[in-house]
Image (cartoon, rainbow, N blue to C red; front, top):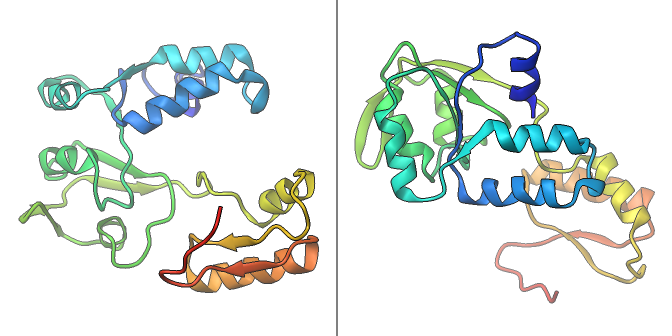
Length: 201
């Protein structure tokens, strides 16, 4: 959506955009199917979906290596710990003309964090890859809800007050802070799930 807006405004050139993530493709299609459930208008949603070329298969992803012209690849990275992005990184990180944009937090110890922190090379699939690409970080694009969003969601839900709420994803300090906040501001008993705990859904 943001790329479409930037192209329409003339702030970036109109480039081919490839979405190279089967899960992200599915989510994009859900956005268009359930237009009344999010903030994008119907026209914004359909424009976004029609701007992007979907790389559904492994063969589609590999074919991106043959693109000789400037283009944008959007691929799930898991903080550069896995996924299709690693194959693109192996091919493109050593080129000065490449720009890598991290759209979110990079946890310590991950390839993404090492790159953002200025690593001159990173190891991918057993090979050391030089990092010559320009790196940028966009903050504020996390798909994770913040304190307020989760609090609002819980307040609007029809969950019974005795429903156990377990926080399972995040840095330990942030999880504890969110637990305390939600306990104070909602009717739920909130816990941070412990490692290897079994939760009944």
